[in-house]
Image (tube, rainbow, N blue to C red; front, side, top):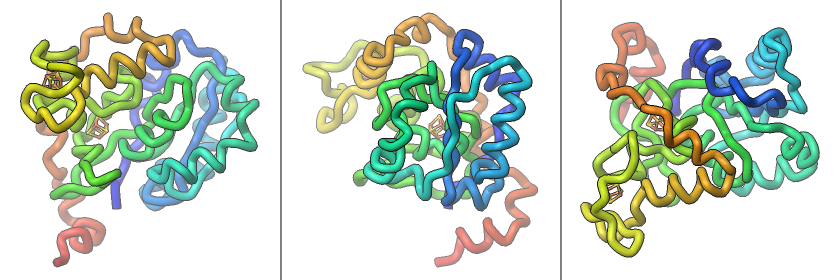
Length: 223
Ligand code: SF4
Ligand code: SF4
């Protein structure tokens, strides 16, 4: 299970500063269990955004947002409401946000931080997609995680070492920052690259003491 926590509302409003119309998406998998992305949390977010002057074009909760084909098929009947929004706010883990961003040609923003439960979870097509860093950066990167897509986990652009679109560290994989650039260009948000992403506070990746004492932690550590 990927455990998520709601981002501060002010941070979410910061993402949405120039976005008046928003579609909200929740996840009936891990996020519902974390009480961050089930229908109750989606409805609360809707009320808060409307209270802040935003128009919510629609909302939905899908089972397992980490499943791209499921996301595409469940959003298809809602296409008008989704495409009528400036952006999507997704209340779930980092893998789910990336899955939605891969399926919808719109800016997709994280409403949650994914917190560390020790080890690695969130596999997608054989590769790790979320390091459970506790401070999700997907807003800055078009919904592609810079910590996992870039071999150096760079947060402010490419290192310059890529060759023919391949990473200089791991030539078998595409340069994550070239993917991020292409995605931002596709959704018309290259302007986001001008924003400086502050140095990462890596201690947000450490499992917090209050999580270490939960049954969820104990269950996840079982062999
Ligand atoms: S930035 Fe990456 S590692 Fe951090 S929560 Fe988001 S998807 Fe996960
Ligand atoms: S080549 Fe691209 S993916 Fe590889 S380390 Fe440099 S910026 Fe990151």
